[in-house]
Image 1 (tube, rainbow, N blue to C red):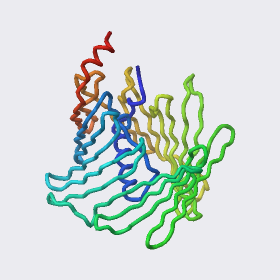
Image 2 (spheres, rainbow, N blue to C red):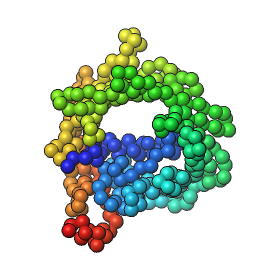
Image 3 (cartoon, rainbow, N blue to C red):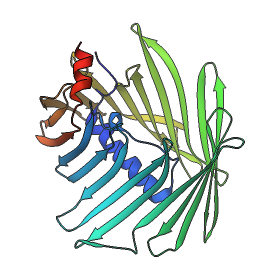
Length: 316
């Protein structure tokens, strides 16, 4: 069976790492990550990802929830992020930076989360340095349906007010994000049938100082696989977005990404993906080769030991 974990791992892995970094630096809506976000199957305990740009180690609890991330720059320089939960919700996140094997307290941070559900849910995130200095506070406000409606950021320098609105028209939902009264981003989501296949269509527009700047339109199937993507730049002379690039994705019979084709006005390039799998059931890929660049991504995966009695019961 093809499931949503058979997406473009290279893109999704980079996306998850980027989200983790952005959450650490700027404060984003608290989110719980698990093995499926990293396209990992089974009871994975640890996954070490080795690429040409470095190493990342991801550790999970027996339920598959992310508990620790280690970014390795060298044997003595590394960053460690710990995630602690209560009742399935993120309660604490600690970012510890080590240089020459020593904890750098000046740059290490603690994020503390408090949740109020008396009326509509409100999450408060307080950020402190390891020197016990208050740095930031984020307040996330939700409506009765669980949609994020506002982010209020308070620092020693002032307050930033992010408001999020949702509009529905002809079956499409547009989410608009305004920061201090200026639009920064909008995302319109809808569905369309294409050759008998239901696709999710998402159009994201990026604004610079309130003016349209860039846009991306993506087409994704019901299994979460991205099939096509268009990128646009805003042309002030034409007062409209102009397509600059088209990206198409191809998948094999098992649902794994096998090719990525990028087209622009001046050139076309094709990347192909080759996988090597481990012997685990279900299997995970442990090496991915991207041609023609011959870039390698290696995953060293450690699993929790299976409960022999439970396995026998399942087989019977």
